[in-house]
Image (tube, rainbow, N blue to C red):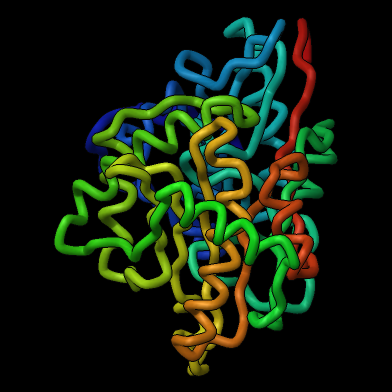
Length: 332
């Protein structure tokens, strides 16, 4: 086996990949603006690969981050060859801390499942072979941040503070409604502007363009059920939203779809939006129950995010995820 440098370009032909390797489309390198891409080749086939970013990356005080993404490895041997190699490449670029796996930024795929639980994967949930976390640990990485998804099995359960919050918001002129699919692009332009404001202080936040944001969400437009996405407004201004979507993985398994996924909750910072996230979650549960859903999944919450506090009133943890880091230096 040997490591080779694969050229990063907008359009490149696919390289031969081992059947045991999760398939990767090299056109993502240009779309995600990767700075480098490396393969482990064995008998003419790629048995591991990863991309690197060091130019346009999240900021962290007193650090120069190097980001590792598009990671896959067919074996412990290929991972053990690839990870030290790419760490050296990041060190040569002057990076002081390696972070991964993350496909460039947190708007894209990142983290590894580190505790699977008994529930099967849900729609749009990142998945990885169970050996991947150990590959990172054996290469000297340590956990950087932890995340979880939680399962709600009783949608009728309610936070006792919600009725008062609903009354307060209605009295102040705040209204909420389903997503208007006839104005899909306008709706998601408003969601983009609010997200850029609401998420700006999030862990490892990186801004992206409106065009890239819309491109990501246009892909899932055919799956949307507008009643599960709530838009909270005051005098035409979007104050908050909740993005929900049915768990279509249930249908793929031949099951009835009785679960929906709360993928994102965001509100504008400030006193007038205080409690709005909790209210939107409660309303989404009520509406989903009326639509015939029995369960909800609160997806991919950072350990310090306010959404975990909201979720705790209704749910129990079903899955855990980890983002890893490794200190870099000369000769790493």
